[in-house]
Length: 195
Image (cartoon, rainbow, N blue to C red; front, side, top):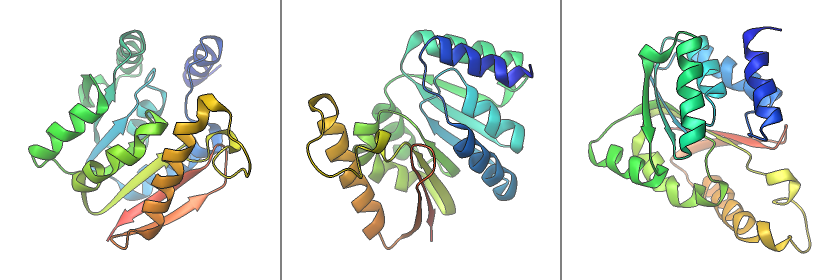
């Protein structure tokens, strides 16, 4: 069992959502071809996607997680996979962190958005401000188990998330500053390049 399988097994047993296999493959290919210097990740979870990205390029990673237990496990994993010297960790609310980064005029070559799905639309203007020209916004889980594309009634507990994700997708589709491609793979993801 290679070491990443260990993280995957831990995630499965503890019901921690991590990036799915085909999405992970696309993300690592993108890191490899893009060779970003700075990556921003929203939703560290236990560090799986962060490690994948760092092992595919020489970037520095800024990652945000508000769940203390997950953050602790992520820091442990970053240490274990010898990438922690390239990680800046924020144990905080993503909205607050991205607003602060924006006000400091920070820029990133790649942003991996995998946090609270219902908040994507609120994060969007800040993420756009944080992207370098030619930078990529990679958004995971945009179809939310198929609910976003489904017709008919959405279960109550998913309703506001689905409404917000539909708004987010619509915003991405109509933003002429970005070139966006949507992928119907795994739980759906989009790749947007800032012109």
